[in-house]
Amino acid sequence: MPDRITVLGIDIGSTTSHCILVEASIAADGIERTRNRVVDPKILYQSEVTFTPFQNETIDTAALSHLLDTWLPNRQVPFREVTNVGAIITGLAAVSRNRVAIIEELRRRFPKASVITAEDPRLESWVAWHGAAGPLSLGRPGQPILNFDIGGGTTNLALGVDGRVLATGSYFIGARHFLVDKGQLIPRSHSARAILSARPELAALPAADTAQALARLYTGLLENLLTDAQSPILSQFEQAAFPATDLSSCTITFSGGVGELIYANSDPPLFSFGDIGGHLARAIRSSPRLSRDLASSRPSFRTRATAIGLGLHNTWVSGASFHISDRSLLPLMGIPIAARFHFGAPWDSITQALNSVNTLPTFAVQILGRPANTDIIRETAHCLAKTFTHQKNTLVLLTESNSGKVLGDYVTEWGRLPIRCIALDEIEPLPAQFVSIGEELKTSVPVSFFGLY
Image (cartoon, rainbow, N blue to C red; front, side, top):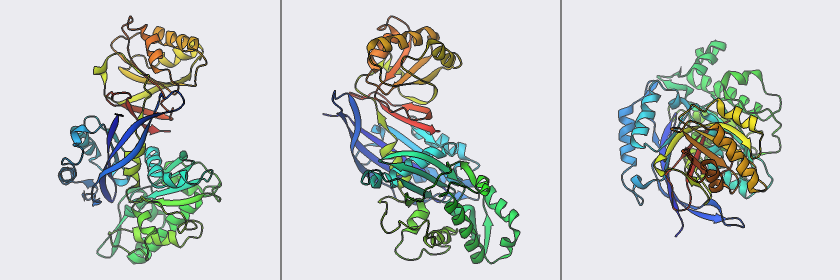
């Protein structure tokens, strides 16, 4: 009977919030059958998409708690049996004044959860691409796909090919930076107020005209992201820069709440959500550069793309050959990835990398490459053991090769050295800042990355 995992993805956004529960199997592949993969994912439950309960510029935590209560009664798989929880707080929700209280509430309910906030916009772009454009990409080998995930607070874009993300970026361009109230558009964010400060004539216009002008401004900025000569104005909206490159030949897709409106069969309604989302969707549909692939490339998931990507694509599993010196150490949440080096790296480079973080209670090291023989593994392990001298601390080793057990055995000298070591293998070395490690399954260990560079 293969291992099975259940993953809960929660998306709390500027406009709407929802969750998804996914179950999948873990199966071995590769010639030696040691590499584990998450396969056959099945969506067990999707909540209704609900407005995020804002009160002015803060989220009503009592209303949000009630919303979570309505989502989380026992379903086909009891939530207490969930393997991993990823909660992402995005856009204006992530910069709300009480965002810390939201994070604390989620962590109280899900002590094993990886809670991702606006400080991690590249991961939001990454998971949205996988949720929206990933299935299209796998069916179109060699064709680059650029996905714009446009919500209430941010536009998160990612470029990928053959099911892999190559570049990400994030900008404060979205539907709810301006809200309509009594016939007037009210700026709701710092960037919105900066626009009106730079263009005061917009504030004097009727709300419909102001919204149309703002939609054209935002659309022009999105068009500029397709070029290799980005406008300096983009930096005023930048949360995470997207590399300037010529994207004239890539396929373009959209997701998020505005993406849902863009793909609507009729013209999106104006002000129906009390914001400029309808105006922005219409402006994008009218842009020849941005709308060129609307008919031929329609993602299956749009509003739910981030939650889908978080639930289906942000959990990895280790190979079957792993070392855990003390199983009570798991789970580990939010461990900093302190160093990256290759097997066989010079001792001085390894010791220099570890000496700067050796006093951290727990940290992870990514060891790259596939060693040609066990002598290289043993040499690297001996250097790690000599450098890692704090017996009460925990050393987490992540390697892409099939060498987790032997690496951990060499580091601890088969348990003779009092080193608390976890060594997981067959883990893709994503360029991330943090990693969370779940509890051991029968033949693997679940892993999630966040803080992508």
